[in-house]
Length: 336
Ligand SMILES: NC(=O)c1ccc[n+]([C@@H]2O[C@H](COP(=O)([O-])OP(=O)(O)OC[C@H]3O[C@@H](n4cnc5c(N)ncnc54)[C@H](O)[C@@H]3O)[C@@H](O)[C@H]2O)c1
Ligand SMILES: O=C(O)[C@H](O)[C@H](O)COP(=O)(O)O
Image 1 (cartoon, helix red, strand yellow):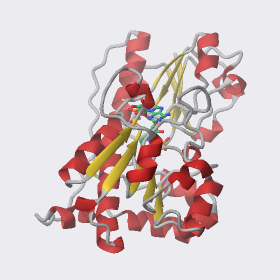
Image 2 (cartoon, protein in one colour):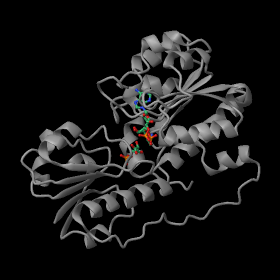
Image 3 (cartoon, protein in one colour):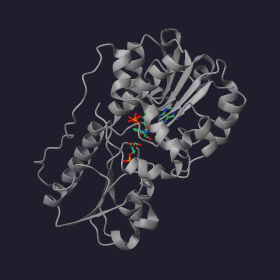
Image 4 (cartoon, helix red, strand yellow):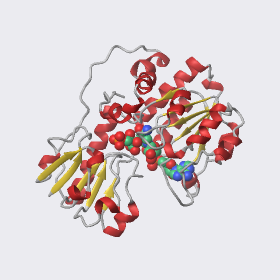
């Protein structure tokens, strides 16, 4: 059994070796058809495009991605080729909640947003969105939800994207990237969406860059249709739009989900899926490395920013936008 593993999946080394005969570690972008040809399984992150070009003619039977997002996997091709794939639902929802909580505190502290009298629109109410919903209620915010796939299942308490556009002071995107079909999210926030806004909201995107049309959000920032933006995910990563980076309130290098806890969850889940698929025993334990931390302030508003302040990641990205991928690869995983 031969497995190719993305060399930026933490906590996996030493465990996968006991579950395979041969393990090769590579950067996510370095997976090539020649290398994967005689592999049985690939354990990846979002940086490996798993498509016909990579997989055709290979003996790969299983792909596990240590992420929730799977827009880098051509699921239609996998079906056609008989390749089973697996992702890690919910693995990093706590990390994104931590990021959004810090962002909301900064909007209150530095932009004068009165959270208790603000309405938050959550677009995509899955693992992350549900936690943001709970967080917003804890902060006494009014919340509106948009999730057409869930609404179409007969679930209640959802509204249209237009209602969110008209009533919200802050709008946060938590959908997968879906390129086509009735639930398409590619450029969900386009010029039409920005034209519908009534309250000059702040826009937060921790989903995928392509969910927001970059030119449309730049126009909205320039014309002050929106008050500002917090952007963690970008179109065309790692070659991100520098003008957008200059103009946002906070811009970070796709690290909202980068907690040690979230990464450990992802590694455990991807290994469990691998073991289920190949019928291997699961007798491993994965836990984030303990990190020493200061005594935190009992006041929640202070504690949240002591634990994580996205300005640090924003400053690092603004100083070196060309190091987008390096900043992610060498990220000092934070604790939740
Ligand atoms: N920035 C980061 O580090 C980071 C971390 C985690 C997740 N993400 C991104 O955020 C996305 C959401 O994460 P999650 O764990 O909540 O995923 P999830 O699959 O649990 O939830 C996604 C939700 O979006 C809904 N949805 C689908 N199409 C929609 C549409 N057209 N309009 C509105 N809602 C729609 C789904 O019904 C579902 O409830 C992931 O797919 C990933 O791309 C990014
Ligand atoms: O989809 C996800 O889980 C997140 O976007 C995640 O943060 C991406 O992680 P990476 O591919 O960088 O490991």
